[in-house]
Each structure stands twice: as C-alpha cells, then as structure tokens.
Length: 179
Length: 179
Image (tube, rainbow over all chains, first blue to last red; front, top):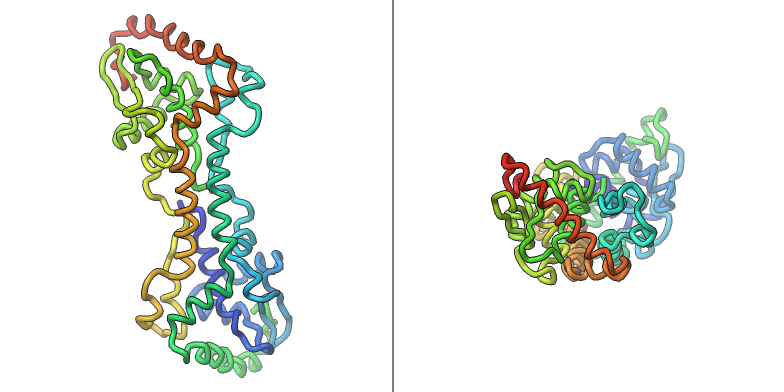
C-alpha cells in the first residue's frame, strides 16, 4: 500500500481549481465533487481537514463554499499532505533491536541508546522526501497545468462555476460549504 | 499505514548479524529467528525474498544456512527494501485528472499528456528518498552498531552461533537454510 493515495490526489486536484477563482466565488463541496467525479461526502471530509489545517476558509450561505486561506504560492504540497495524513511516517519502527536473544530479557543501555541506526536512515530519507514536497506550491502546480492547457481553459472553469450559480439560488435548503 | 515496516526492519536486523560472521558459519532461519525473537516462518519468507534478489546465498545441510552474497559495503538499504517491497510507490496515482467534469467523458489530449503534475512531484520526492536509502550500506549500519556496542559484542555473537553448532548436529531431520 502506497504512503499517499486518493486523499492527497483528490485534495490537490480540488485545490488547484481554487487557485484562480474570481474573488467573489466560493466553491461548494457539491461543485468540487462534480468537477472531480468523486463523492460529496469524500470532498466534505477532505475539506474539513484542509480547513482545520488553515489551508482553506469557508463561508456559509447560498453563495458559500471554500476558498484558499492564503496565496497559492504560500501553500505547499507538504502543507496539504500534512493536513490530510498528519506526520504519518514512511517507516514504522518496532524497536525489534530490543528483542535480540543475546540481551536475554534486558537489553543493555548501549543497545537502546538513541535512535536505531536503521530507523535513522529511514528518518533521513523521509526528510529528503518531505523537502521536495515542501519545495512545490499550489501556484507551481497550477502554473504547470496552465502551460499545458489551452488559454480558454481558465475561462471555461470560471464559466462552469458561473453556470452553477443560478442552480445554487434555486435550492434554499442547501448551506454553503456543507453542500 | 507506513510505507515500510516490519519486513524491512526484521530483514535489516537479521542481515547485520551476517556482516561479521566467520567464513565457515552460515546462519539458519532458526538461528536468525531466535536472535531476533521473531517466527521462523517469517524469517524464511524474508530470506526467500533476499535470496531471490541476490542479497544472500544459502547452503543446504546440517551446517547450512545463509550468508551475505556480496560484501556488506556492496549491499545498500535500498537493495534490501527493493528485495522485500519491489518498487512499491510512495504515491498511488489514480489519474483522477481524467475525470474532470469540464472534459465530459473524453479528456482532451493536453489534459492527459505526460505525467500528472501532482504525480511528478511525488515521483521526484520518492527519488530523493531512495537516494538516501541507496547511500547507506549494511557495512555503514554495522559500523554504527559497532561504535555503540562494547568490544566484546562481536565475540558474543560469534560465540552464540558457536554454541548452537552442537545442537544442529544433534538434529539430523533439519535441513540447513530451511531450518
């Protein structure tokens, strides 16, 4: 099983649609779910975590929804991964060094002093991995997509949200970010 | 769930005991399991994979067992991880970029050309992580343990294996590496 999967992928794809939203537009969970072809409940769960981590803010009401909480060049891939996965380690150390038969039931102090050398290698590897995730921002990712996409794509996205505004107004039972 | 866990930890700890074994000693799965306080069947499974990957060699017979297949400074942590986990990716990309509602059912060529930019960041991060794993060898790890351990520890390990030699001879139903 991979370390990171659907939650990271779906969240980042959703967040990329928020990068260039007009100032008066908030994206609802329903809209983000429709855009990505994923379930509303899943988007709600992901964006709950992203909001708790301060990556997005939400506004209630018929025109409510989510926006980025800070500029896209101030949100790194690591920020998003940490919001969703916490500090989930790359390596799970079970301290089996303590079980060596030569120690019988009591490992000596030298054997358990400091971090296990195997664990230390994994921690170093994980740090290098996280440095890369911290070096890429949502703005970087959005820029890469923009360079591939036709110029009309950004307008298409804004228009897509615009076409859904009347639909929002017609459903008074819905509530902003929670829709 | 972490990317790497017990199989990597147990294998590396077992392999470290093979680094300074006398030339005429092969460690059986039974001995390695006893040393680490883990099951014989688990060691057999791990060492089957390590043998397939060319990290250890095995000899059959009463005095059989496993030895490192090449010098400890020519076996990296990445070699061991790859033997056990293959190329298990850090990130599982589900290509959800294809599902964008704006594409309707047919994503345009630009949207699926090349690797998804999110996936590309993860691949770069994983490459940096693997570089670290590839920079540390079994000899490095063994050296770090040796610097912490009392000088007598290496002798204690050899003596521990030595004390088990008569026990091997007394059990003709056992078969070398498979014990």
